[in-house]
Length: 418
Image: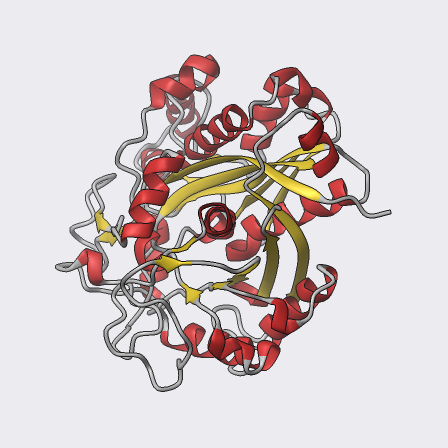
């Protein structure tokens, strides 16, 4: 028998806000978290803006994880921040995590260019490497993809297993989906699932710029990301993290936990059309959405809201719109479709996790956040994208899409807990 799965804890870290209340208040009010990047000197790059987390307080994390003093990988620190706050928000006793499941979504390893440069500018590579290791406490050149789960696993246990999922922009949603499936099938009672990422560094921002998918509107950062708008020219990169505490509904009820929402269904697909472009008709997205709706035991006309992948790139927005209409039919025109990236920027691996949290909060607070910067709709994007202002929500389900490089797609279905 399949078990119902509840969301009982949320931890969020983004340019829009790094506490649940601040994040949701800013998202609902349409406040953009995109600003000039200050983490490094970006003056030489064609793109100098991003969804940067400005109020991250490292010492709060280091207090709990002293071994992280001097940690340079932003995605590790962001992920730990969100993880800690998710557990605290859930009200779970930390000892429960000894038997829990941990699933984390990631994208790319972080390379430290200054270390590489130091090695290249010396005749004695061995001595230079030793100097770097001494100055960075042994953390040099790059951090492995599983570093976050390693730290959390050593700290809290996670006896049901800890896993790292690397699937680009679909990683966060897939991590949550995999944890949901394991709890539903009885393989674990509790899970911490989500993702963290930071691509606000010279290598990533320079590389994405070469792909010609970024907005170059550096002088107007808050208006640079315009999903579904006719004048959109590209997405904006960002950083952040979100982790969700998932429990079997019976376990959550037994301890009197607050339930934000239920996870009802999960679907994923791989269309592998091109590395950076979606299939124009949204083929992979169609398969992913249909799988999730079927997995939830729903019909298309029972979907009440869509939290879109909505990157603000010309090709992605059109392909996703076509896919939504193909899957939902006339229902697609009747329900709100919102794009959080208009405010957060594209958080790559973390985007699906942050948008999963936003989907749960949409149901919990009965409010749909807006898609900002949508002044003139693209004729090919003709759905209700909740332009500029949030609105009350009376629905019972939210479908959340995450589509990644290489054609990786994931869809989650969230339900109102009654």
